[in-house]
Image (cartoon, rainbow, N blue to C red):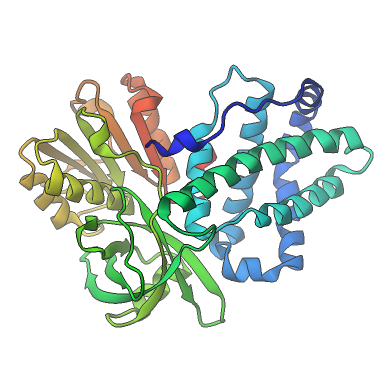
Length: 399
């Protein structure tokens, strides 16, 4: 089943509310960064455990999480007042999967609502945020919230867990240090085994840092689900990933969630695949290649990867081994530094052959994904055949 099918698309905004949203959307949009900054400040002052134990402190410090929340709500509101625009179902699906991987539950939407609407009044003023304006934006918020709550409940049910009960204690059974500096960890549940997963999915990993905060990060799975173990690669960037690289060894125990992620099953298309990545964005692509090598080796696969150099290229040898093992697979690599085994410069879609009617999977940093997505669209790849994953809270960029 396509996971985005869980996203409700039939709810419509009351015409009177739509009129108010249309009139106030520019004002809210002009102040949205300030509103969300005040919102998070208020919420974390009232509930400091959320910053210590749930929200990514690095993203908060950089402002990424604030911008993500603001832009996601604005994108949803824009669709509600102009239904001719594409429905943001894929945006909501990506958010829902990330929420499920963090164990978000329905009651937490009440907390967000309380502090978000207090922030709107504080920034715009009570004279502007009349009862009618507040009511219209309240309707938008709860329509989006209900859609996400329903999606997340379905995801929990599909995973066979109670709402929010996604964490498992898992023993590290193997650690491998990749030449690129990434660390590959294989974990095994100490209790009920991890369920099967689709290629391209990810887990959240929780660690307790020296200051006592329990912080979470998400990592893509790079193995096949045959034996019940989970293997993921950690690039040493940010406090959690650096702590894992410096401290975690075989025999240690981590908090690891059951897998989530809405990249579609690559076998479902019955079309050629193009796997495009940069940096650590290679991880879901390696997971897909592992899956194809195990169960669908005849699949036609084109693999493109971009990196700074051969030294920084994660899982380089395994990627080449997997491509060589697939009889109808090809690999093109771009390095910013000159190298005899790669094209020099940035990935250029116009410079390589693009299979007809291919399903494209794309993963990397914000700038890379946006740039390559635009190039692929110029080459005629429609959005329904372009499947993106961002390793940041910026899914609204792809709406």
